[in-house]
Image (cartoon, rainbow, N blue to C red; front, side, top):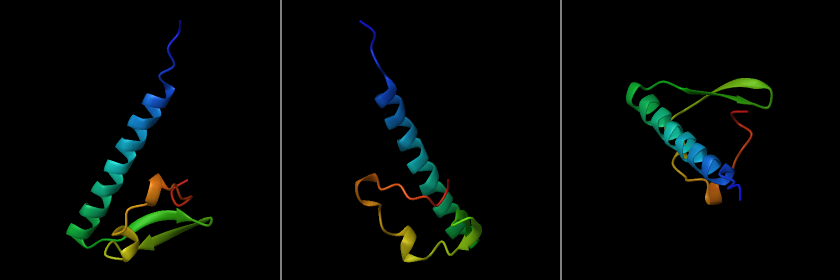
Length: 67
């Protein structure tokens, strides 16, 4: 029987991306620099101290900000 590890791989990748995102916010706050994302077809600079970065995404909600 072949075991499918895709879900485990995806879970680990999601966890790594969440950790990287937290690191980006912490670094931006420490150095008082904007967080740059791609949103609605445009490059946007965001304030790292905004409430947007204080609230955890419920249920691992994925937005289209960085795609």
